[in-house]
Image (cartoon, rainbow, N blue to C red; front, side, top):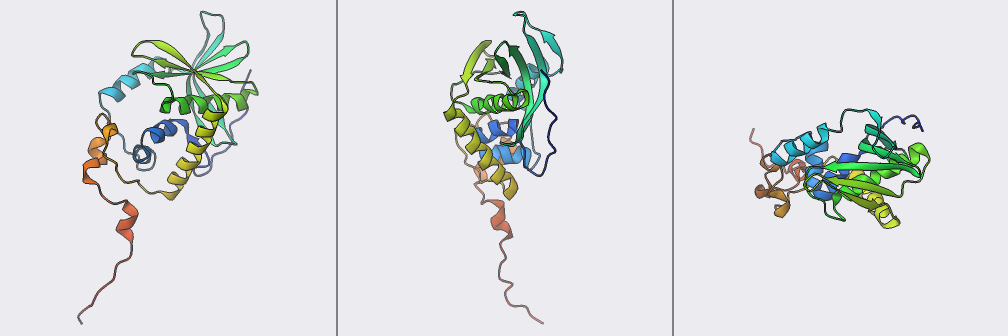
Length: 214
């Protein structure tokens, strides 16, 4: 099976799949990375990069189970408007299965589910084949977790894409929340969640000029 040609992109008409996971975790994090182009590494992000280096070589081979296995496969879906790169796609007899590699642990219902669901919808569209499931590979315990791509997950995905597109098109950086999510976030220094500043659009509200002396 070969994918169809990728459609042309317009401004935020297609959302990066990686941004969905960032947004599901923290809207401000997503805006910092994808609007402000701000990123910083810590131990967790470095560990994640090392885990992805194993599958980011972009090749095709036959797996031990006899199925074709592609790595670093670019994917997209025009109707929903998402695009990204699948770490691994395994082609089973009943269709392709996206496999997303995570360096840490996996929690069912977490942000990673949206990411693998988006990949599944891309593959469904590109190969015109059913993709009823995805896989999360958790590096912490080296286990594979099946994610069922059902109507509820697809609805969550559709809502997240619409909200994220609205955020990106507005071009505003959401206010910091300063909660437990910030403790291990690599962007903490640049985000400055303790500052609790107002959203930046308030800084540009026209103010009275006052009285001027001649």
